[in-house]
Image (cartoon, rainbow, N blue to C red; front, side, top):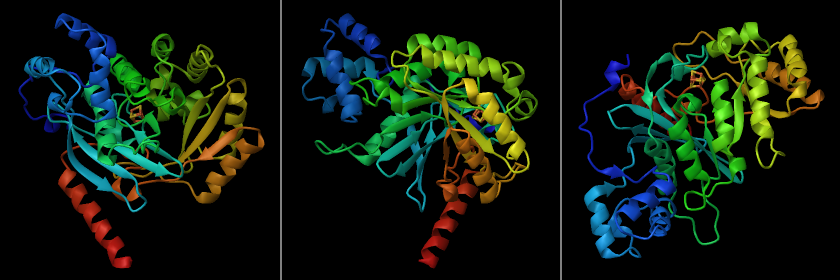
Length: 381
Ligand code: SF4
């Protein structure tokens, strides 16, 4: 199925400045005989102003702009389609180099706006409850394609008014793919999300979510200050082996120890990790599972996000009842945990957690389906 997603693209010859780390841009400017601080101007134009050409950079000298245009460009991935849900959630279907597609989702809530960003085309880990895993793995996204998703979303909201708030307040690396399996590109992009010359989003609000690539977590602590979420989904190894096959390699205790260590190594060690737990009817949503989770997490400072399963076509799993979700949540809450039940957002455009696919084969059919749903909404109103 992966083959159908690739269409041929000639490799572009010019350097892409989007996603290029600041130090690398500074070196490039030095090679061109310019002062390193010019990098600051260029970064501000790309990320603060959303510039896509050197002509727009009016405080950069004409000669340098012309030289840059000869050797470099600002090349974001292309938006192929944008969907807007009845609840305000937005989803972009984004075409990346080589012709593959990924999806990016924006979830507006009171006082915040969270962008869910993809790190790979497809995913190799094949968690049984995830539609991304079902389409297999194609390739890692480049740092330009990762930060490019933020660039696209930020531009679509327009520049914030002076003193006004930005639409995107939080970013979660929780879209398609396992971010720690695309380590260097994800770290470069997250650094641009957090640094002032990039998007300047607080490190508390940029979160990497992992299914548990334990050795990469040790490396991550050396190069990143992002917040951490772990996709747990089961309270014991036997069940997690079935839901998240990576668990056979890095079992739960090993994973939680590595996450705890990552948080302890952060300069501000007041932050706690987030535990993500997708509740699946009759599989991991029973009282015994909640009680096991209470015991398991005792030594690990954390907050818990419960995500009622979002069904997708090839899945046999079902969403639990509201009562089952509340029962599970109450057990954790009564044991002293901070628990949040994530409400399903963007269901009508398949933007909910675990539903991202980005595949092209059924794109026309899906677009048609969204349109039909939108028309139905209009009929009802
Ligand atoms: S849940 Fe995450 S890690 Fe697992 S298959 Fe889906 S995208 Fe990959």
